[in-house]
Length: 186
Image (cartoon, rainbow, N blue to C red; front, side):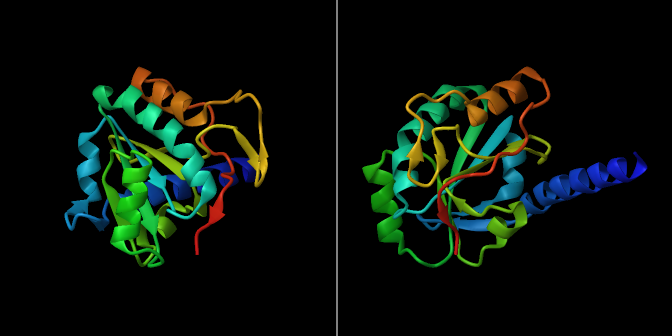
């Protein structure tokens, strides 16, 4: 029993310390503006959306992400696209954002500092923080994709939307982590 409690405590500490580290990072956006992620504490919630312009699953999820962003932006939840690595030029990233109607700052993480800090592994992957910089949820947007090439006909779990609703209502987020499905970050 004690061993289990110690393991849970260590996992919680690791989860929280990743969030605190993320809020001390500065990243440049595709428009050249530098974002100090400590500014995210001004939001009731902040969603980091890890993206890749060439990932077909990212492309397919843009509509859903846009709908969720639109539903919650007036309630103090801000969305930030994160493009890890140096694989894409700003022109390609901006074209992706325009083509898919992304209306959020697109931040560049060329050295994977933020990506490693929060443990993101694939695109698309979403991470929700509260105003204190504590990670509330990390993983899939929903359960549309069960695995690569395997989509559900009907989505039955709305992980990100449920997590945001819980955060805004002051309730504990029930599902803290899911295993995201998408294109590996390299």
